[in-house]
Image (tube, rainbow, N blue to C red):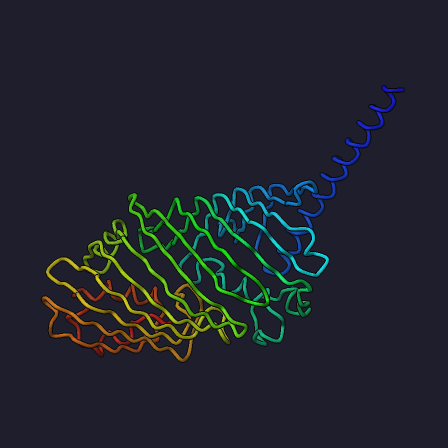
Length: 362
């Protein structure tokens, strides 16, 4: 009798786990297929899992690709829920843990850009009428999410960010590695204060710490204070010196921003103040650097019209003759970099009109 009981129990477990893995396999393939239809991107999911005992879910080795080039990858992610709030239509997440994520940004028009991904997830009424890529999300309005969302904590370990741009005979890749990030108190649609603490290691083992306290309201306006300290430009300053003739030294910067997200994918206005930047090579800058932008500050995206870019420099040293520069530009950022490197003379020695058309369009 005991043997029969154990055989029945074993059969139940075998059936449960077999059915579970088969169901998860079909869920994985369905998610990959639907995501490709919506965005035109390739999504690879290593494995999904869930547990009713801990009320948690996990994913292993998730990769997002465009034309076989990786855009985003995660080695592992875990989500822990609270069960009771579901009965009041609230998705309450205790913790999201993400291990080894790697996000890569490419030069404009080289590969898929992230703005297209955001557009594919928007309702059809918010998108332009003419689009080069037809998606399923274009013809079917996105249903409103039926749950409120509350996230207590998001912790990211060992994240990496890369920017890749290929010049004539050289590939430039700037890498941020070994990053750690913690975000707390996130909710939707009742958006509250967002706290972000991030530390990261740049190429060359230099470290930087980023701290933000922000508030995002229902009109998608973000106001906050951001601090970036102990930034070492090690590898990046070599790149700047080689391509632009601008020599940089390590410095500290404090950035305070007011950002409005209303009516655009990212933000339409940014006011920034930066101090304590050191420039070497016979020139120096001390004091403040002011910038005002009226288009999203993402050079990798296709942004046109209403371009405004203003800088206010308080300078000392060999550049005392330049106290204020106001520049309006309409060229894309990568074109600006290429043309600057072709000028043959330092940019600050050129007349203002000669370089006005070379500035990036954000």
